[in-house]
Image (cartoon, rainbow, N blue to C red; front, side, top):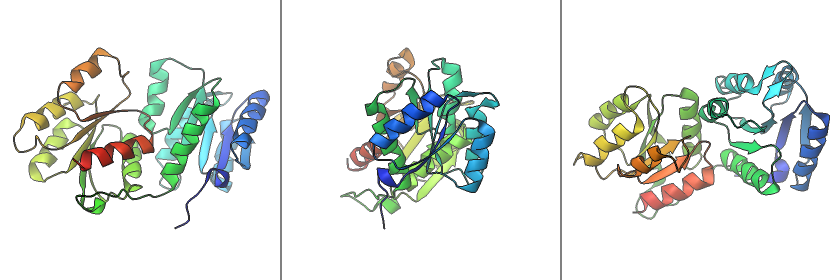
Length: 266
């Protein structure tokens, strides 16, 4: 199967500033990207996506006709466009504003201005989403690995599932919260659990504690996915519950791959 490279990517750049358009386009060109479509409004972006869907959208947050979270949500809720990767470029630092993007499954959030190293990582993450690369395990076949994904955001679950399927995982169950997850855990065996931290009814910490301290499930590796700061008191407490790995939102596919290979080879 042909693997896409950076130069194969078609990027839609949504940026209201002509100066920023030129600057970002130049930076993309320096990375070998040849096809960049530029628009300055969300309405024009929607038309462009319908006519010629891109591989990756690079977008600012604020526009004269709205905010890009509306476009992102629309894309992720439509099966025809849900697989398009989305990268936010913004000087916004309010957590409540960025949280919606993280939950919707953005591939990266870059500050404005950003450095080349940040752009390279985000572009590589986009490639990992587009290129299927099955994980090779010594103990068993990756397609036999049973995974439970737990997150109260459907868009976040869809993003996680897409990343996992791109690595060859096929047996993936989903739950909206810890309570639903517990029901599934009691009914069937799982080789791995990927759970969000903040959820209603039963959060990721409570779920992890039950799994870790129940003799019949204590062996299951747990990856905690969270938008919480890794140095927050909450995260220090989470590690005490026996979670095997902590992963940021938005998370990079290559980082998840390395985690999976380490956890499933133990």
